Image 1 (tube, each protein chain N blue to C red):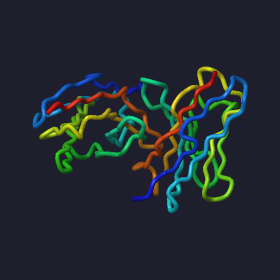
Image 2: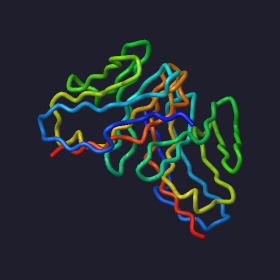
Image 3: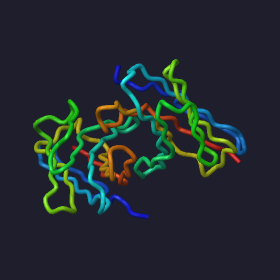
Length: 112
Length: 112
């Protein structure tokens, strides 16, 4: 069964550093998403991406965040200057159409 | 108004029993209601979904019941098995977007 692949599975970074979280969506999918889950809390929407541009973003997705699909297969989330409160599990998801996403297994980001 | 309230927070069921998880919403713009299953260390996986023009949807042992007038929907797991032990999230999506708003999750434990 096709999978959404996320790397790395765990990333530790110092506060103020830039991090890039990587995702390889399922190959024929057209819609891409990032969500995050702070430990023990609910899954929260960050951003959706379609047709090479952001289609929607949440209040969490401020100027410190950016997304890119640099080469037609990867989909990245960049956090420019990490804060302690950015520590969370970040999930990438993709879908053929709106809804019915497949999520990846996540990247656990720990900011120290 | 964008919230989805989920209960209970945790649920313990004996093998063979029925597990019932409830969700409620306020926003009448929601028109897609999926349930996700999440195992430790994995991303959420789509289990079953319903739209408000249907009051019930069944897939195998999993059934969604939907009450549009009460703005409530629930997941029933029949003949619960230890392998069903996971965290379950309800979610909702407004008609004009593909982002998901998740409930807070229910940790289900099924004992033999």
